[in-house]
Image 1 (cartoon, rainbow, N blue to C red):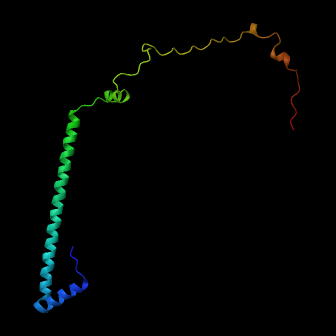
Image 2: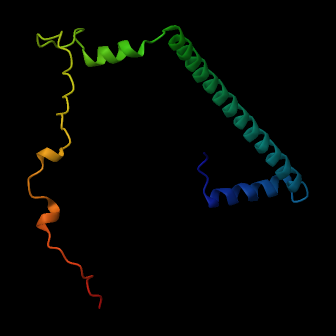
Image 3: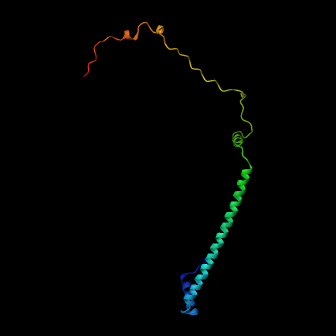
Length: 136
């Protein structure tokens, strides 16, 4: 804020000591400190009030934007369609009346019957053993 060097500050203190005197100098410094404190408080209050006004202005703008959006009922489906089809019509390939294909039917499988089995049965193919397997 002020560009005062240490030497200049020393000169100001020496002049104040000579002019005011050592007896009244503490009272003068106290009064100057109080004035500086009041000036800082007023500057801080001004800054806070300016910030409050700016914040209130932003809230008013936000409130008007919300009200405008509430009045403009948006149809989500129409918004999606307009994004998907910017020309207004979906792309047509000439077969608009095509229905989805029918699901494939499962082939019918009949369980085997005894007449469809080969003449040699499974039991004939295996050798007959009467002994139990040996355990080791």
